[in-house]
Amino acid sequence: MIAAAATTSLAPLYVLAGYLGLLLALGALSGRSFRGTSKDYFVATRSIGPFMLLMSVFGTTMTAFALVGSTGKAYDLGIGVYGLMASTSGIVHSLVFFLIGIRLWAIGKRYDFITQIQFFRSRFESSALGYILFPILVGLVVPYLLIGILGAGSVVRGVTVGMFPDVFSGQPHPVLEGKMLFVGAVPPWLTGLVVCGVVLFYVFQGGVRSAAWANTFQTLVFMVMGVLAFFLIARELGGVEAAAQKVLENSPQHLAREGMIGHWQFLSYAFVPLSVGMFPHLFQHWLTARSAKTFRLTTVAHPVFIMIVWVPCILIGIWAAGIGVEAPGGNSNAVLAAMVGSVLKQPLITGLLTAGILAAIMSSLDSQFVCLGTMFSNDIVLHLAGKDRFDDRQKLLLGRGFIVFIVAVTYVLSLFPPPNIFDLGVWCFSGFASLFPLVFAAVYWRRATKAGAIASVLAAAGTWSYFFYHGLIARPESGPGAEGEYLVFGLMPVALIFAASAAAMVLVSLVTPPPTEEHVERFFPPQA
Amino acid sequence: MSSRAGLAWGFVLLLGILHYDFWWWGDRTLVFGFVPIGLAFHALISVLAAGAWAWMIRVGWPSHLEEWAEDGAEGDPR
Image 1 (tube, rainbow over the protein chains, first blue to last red):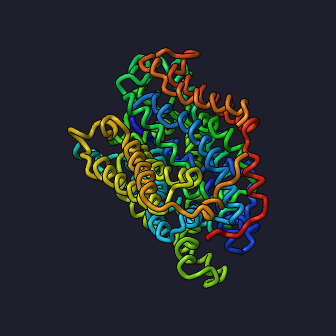
Image 2: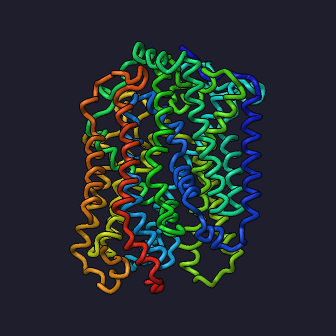
Image 3: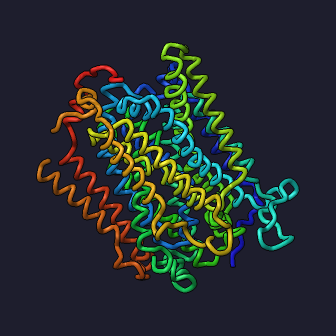
């Protein structure tokens, strides 16, 4: 058995501090391009080009879920994890970009929409729909942010074990009485605080533009570091073939799906990537992109980029199982940090790779922070008080104030972490995916009505809350009913939540009066 | 929809069907000596998906949506 990371050199921390300093400098630099207006802050005056859009979309989508979560999940379930999320996303994400994104861009361009709630309110002629959607969307973004903060805390704790034994005493082992875990490691609450502070700084400098600059930089960093980590770990294990042989000898079940993942579970996972159709930050990119053509590069490159990040993570996860790495405290979130720290044993490299993981995490937080501020300012405050009630400075202040509030709430929640980042991510994405019938009907079904839209959102929220409670909150941590993924009739809950949402949309729309033809016509471009 | 766009959509559909590769479910063969075949096949699907979308953009790009969007706003319909 190989224990968790055990390096006492402070070099990894110096590298991390240098990286965070670089980000602060980049934030200050991008702030110089900031024109001082709320429109520039919230949508960068529609100036984001194809490359930065790709980096921003990919960087935001790939969070701790993709790196820390996928490695940990592959350690638990084997190679099938790639098929559950990565290859499906390569097909479905681009499908949604193509079928939904381009239409939304056209509508946003024609009518100058910024947020998804503005669009839905207008399409369904319902102010109430916005008030119902806002807390649901914010409530789903919070776990997304939470995944990032938890992932950062978990990784930094894993690679700093032993650094400060006099300051941080660690935490008690969940099973072995008297034994302490992570002695001397930087605790997650401190990492979360630093990460949130850095991201808030550069986001406040220039809004969407700063987030896009930082995303581009960080996405490049984490892709390069991910590939580097893969090769260095492989080398330390005697090469990729030797690492695979270890898995074949010690944990062969990790090389296939038999006994690890059910067929219906696998198939019903395909609903999860539909979540991209309702991510608020992505929706905002669609509505505000300079041109539809800026999405071409994202649509094509996205599947390959996912592959570049996920394949190494999945292999590192199964190698960890093959060489007998012990997940500290049974927590598979710590497997990636354990591999980086204990296998490589090179403090500088460990620092660089950890910076790469933090880059992936922070590049997800920034866009979401800005998006939340935009939604609150436009969809709640300005909608209630009127567009001209506040000047630009006040609008910025409102947006930033709401961002700080949400970050504070998320930070407090991060102090009570759930056991598995991947599962929390799947719940979050399942919620967004369950709202997909709403956007699909909005752009493809003329007969969809206001009542149908509201019923669809409420059905998704109700069924999601029910399953979330039974599948995560009320689920025992050990013993009967705690093993494996939470399934309903062998299916992922998202399949049933999606079905409820779609059925509510169709049935309620059909029994309520249709919208006027004149209104609907404005949202349906002429056929080619 | 042109016949070439129809073919591209057919290819996307085919990838969606191939994604459920039940025939590798219990296969532990290592491709190139280190990649499990189930993982290698799905990585191939990712690459083919990129190709499929590049093809789709070439033959099925909705130019009419761009023209409609650029055609001058009618004003916010709210």
